[in-house]
Image (cartoon, rainbow over all chains, first blue to last red; front, side, top):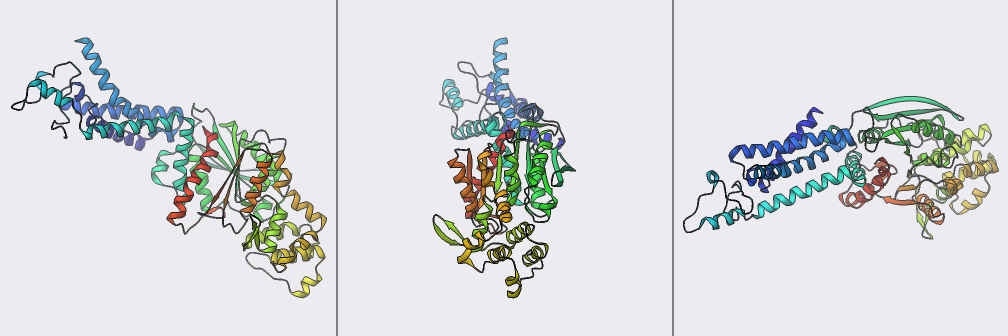
Length: 91
Length: 426
């Protein structure tokens, strides 16, 4: 599972990079500088890892990678949007 | 990019001002309003990234949350290993860790040897139980055949419990009606195996393995508990098979098509019917069709055979191709009864499980017309079934001389056939 987890983290980082390219990342939501870029990659990786593990626990090991795929994408797209929404409400 | 604005430019929400410390520099001649509008514009690269993300997310959701998709993922992971004839590292890494257990159970015909491959983990909460498959790998001792081991391990890695069964008769290249009881008992063992769902177990009969599988599927003890039957290269009517062998031709759409049988079916039929003959004649018939050291009978020996033994000999050796019907009629009542008992056609009306029939179009062991006839009978009985013909297999093994055209033509059919059987796993 260690190798698989590592693979999901790399997959999540790639998804985060795609989210930045799609202007769905933190920077596109008005967050600043390199921290937003790293943050988007990290959110993708964390989402992929978390949902990958959930996929394994709920559906079985072979479903971990497709779960990590959609989990990483949802996290990389929705979390920045939710953070921006929360920040606007606070302001 | 296309818009001339850097992808990494911060994007404010509609109506919001750009944070002053990250505002893009304002080119000469453009107002600040123009710059903000320009920075919101998406390039084709942005759109492409969005499309890729949406497609990947939908694919991930489909293969995880939709039962049809979960069976599809299992199929997609299984087929490359079957075609490659070996485990593939990325698929092994994504699959379940597995273990192998061997056990022996007793049946009316003698001991039955079971080998079980199963995931080491308990079944996941969804669907809550594993699919079980009882594989009867035909005649001969196939337990150490690499292709079969690869199939068993691949299925187990994708989350299924796989049990193979063989008996002394099958190992000795003999078909026996008694093996139906061994199959019933093996299936009952599979049904009670930890983690296997009561409505998720089926039987996969390879080659003549479909004979005990069909007989067991008609047995009242398990006939309503079998979720599916998959027969690959199996027979339907033993007398018809003898007729095809005798005339060295098949009847396809009412026309004769030349067909040369492999030595193995001759060996199996000789061994099987030899049991109904007097010992000395039985031995002569067995020896004449032995696969490793055949001892053909002389004209004098053939002339000395009983009418029944002579008829069998002429059918199997194929030297009276225009007298096949007469030779079939000359078989002893015991032989006729045995052939009937070994024919799935005898019990097809009592089988209630859906049947998936797969056959190599150029099969030299069991002609593909057997599956065509099986499908026709099932259609007449209005029973759920499917028939798929391939050309990428040699009998039941993946051909070693695969050409791309055949592979591309047959791969969707193979995927469809495996998917149908694996739907019971979701």
